[in-house]
Image (tube, rainbow, N blue to C red):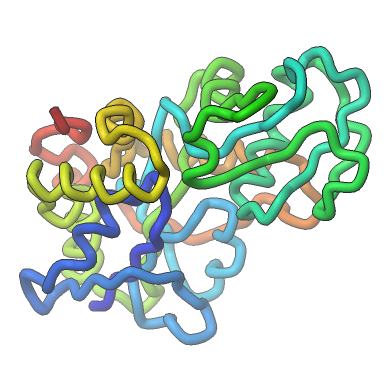
Length: 268
């Protein structure tokens, strides 16, 4: 079965593994963004904010995805501390739906100030949301706060940024193979992880050593409760354009619910 892995900060290791030749014909990974209109036969790692587009064709695997209790690479840029801005207008500058939802779910509760406006043009904004490598760089002026920290302080649960989806028609062996591939990060060893960090560091313009902590906080084996954490993003965001999706879930088996393997995050 094909397995599509998107390229992002938190999927750095998964994307690096997907670029390698497949180890078997049971899972054929590739790097890209899945399309629900053309990839109905593929397993897809889908950003949490985009789940709603896949509910008709795919089921959620509750034990595989991407979660972190650290930084998420989505940050707020402000000229002064965010809690000092009395009437914030927030600029969602070319960010993903997941970033939009996380900011909506955290800003007012964390900083204690109602947002008076959301904009995609930047007009009148004192707060700009940045995503990706820019969120990792120190700002030239002002302040930059990663929303992952605010989310964890407020809710005490990880940020679940991606979930593995499998076709409704997929049989159990196909589901199991795709699940294991994601949980085991495609078998990517430490040397290849180091090279993936160095490549990302060169793009971001930051020391590779700074990425060790960032990526070590990422895990690809999920707990059943992490599915509730993913739903919580929608519930707290209260975004009328992106309501909480209702989706089918793959039934858990003990062998996959409690995998016997070395935990993620062993990058040193």
